[in-house]
Length: 251
Ligand code: ARG
View (cartoon, rainbow, N blue to C red):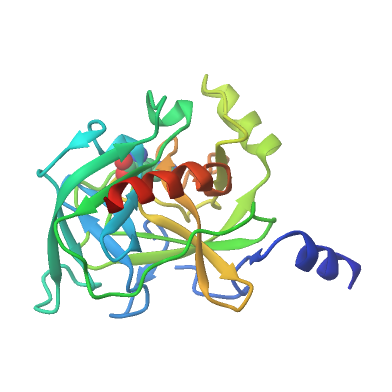
């Protein structure tokens, strides 16, 4: 009870309910049409989420740079990319995190202004850092590390968060240092995001049970390997910077 209360007082973002389907994404299941209406597919082979009707949040490593950009096609509003219900838009402008070098060094976020607003629900950014628990990740990426195919339908999986110390210890062996304030880890053996899921949202539940975005698919060593969880951009760290960039894209 004390723990529950503490969680309520210190954060307004909660993990998703336990016991959701385990089967990604590696180890996931197909998302029914309409379940994650703000999830979008980007033509360079990444995912994203509609933060505003005219703004997509994705990973920094999915885009080239900050500036005018009309090269990205956005498919939205569908689980099945070939569905006739798909809405499409094109990028106009991109703002990538200042200081972005590559995904392992953090700062892995970017926002994209679309050439028109999409008539779809948007996904709010979580206000606070996440607590331990299970979160949902999704994408149209590979369902196996050695697959060469992307998926036609959106897949999702429920992944447990992994403490920074544990994740850092794993990746140090691989020669990579976790940027603790900017990255967080999640996944279990057999369940993870994978190539092509980058940029897509990790979500939890907000104060009123609504979905909120807590992370962005960023990188990992292979996919779903035992001992190597997926690494996600820690949205709570970047929320002020992302909101500022979104405001800039409005003009
Ligand atoms: N960097 C990958 C992409 O561009 C995402 C990899 C996520 N990997 C993982 N094991 N969680 O699609």
